[in-house]
Length: 301
Image (cartoon, rainbow, N blue to C red):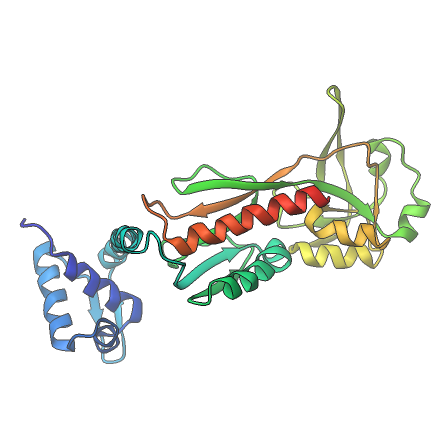
């Protein structure tokens, strides 16, 4: 087979993204006839149908979906390479698409995105908050912020900070709590965070040698950390929260840090990128701001 014309991949990707030859042609600034002709030639070269054409919409076939996933990576690599060269000394510009978990995204990334937009007015930010793992390639995400413990992945990552997990309770509950050791907590009401792999089993440590594992008594199960915080503030039970959510209510006296001499496992805050050799300025600038803010927060805790 002769070498694939990369323009045809771009035409096909636009049609698959938009579900329409007409809208693809408008995005590309060419005629619908050219788009249709080039996609047909691509199908002929590959000897397979890539799109199912109906009167209302164009949908990719199974082969089309596989090719589209690759196309996005290829075109992103090409775009990043040109951007890196052409804009090596330029300020960030264009649309920066970021995904982040609800809790850290709302408390840390959203304010930072606002500051980033003010600093770099030629760049706009689209922030998606979700506790579900988002496919960066399929959703054309430039940067994902992941909090906790990373699974093995072919994606590129950079650790930009860390966080502590704190056992907390509302003052009324803390006043009744008689606990000198982690095991004393097992009979007390506990709010489980369903977003975690093991929401009821917690491993405490003190110094280099003391270790305790405690299974908590669940009275509430909530699958979003901000809601766990709300339930803890309302006195619903003990809860484990990341320090970036618990620090302010602890400082204000609305929550009490329980057994502060014992530590729970800490986690990482990571920037995760689609695999690519080059990073456009908009991504590197945002990650630099995020890393600096993470350091500032760590110094203040």
